[in-house]
Length: 146
Image 1: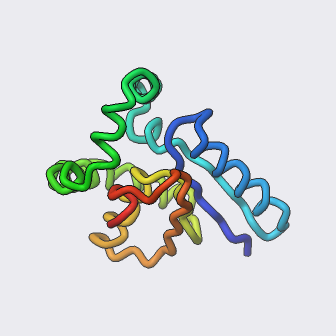
Image 2: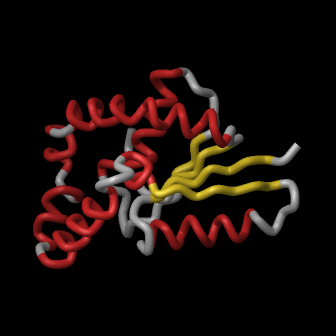
């Protein structure tokens, strides 16, 4: 039986994506391993995913103060906790469909948002699937913690 590893990253052509690709390449050296990498934003928003990523990237590059306000601000993370819980629940049906379709033995996330969703799903649905977070940011910001 082959082991199946499902990678979740956010934003194709990002460092998060390249980290998932590098790990995928390493795991694919083993004949008993099958891997799949999915862009969590495109999975969540099939029609608008590219637009969301484009907007997000432009904001980060052109207005870095917003990046710091969002990611380096523990108070903001606490203030948005309920919103993120709602977002997680909205994504659960898609997560469940992906897991049923691909039947992974483990999930590896190279970006905080899909890791947060997968952890919430695992916690609420009692899914015993191992979840691995690969920190690809310079520092662990509050969104990596669940």
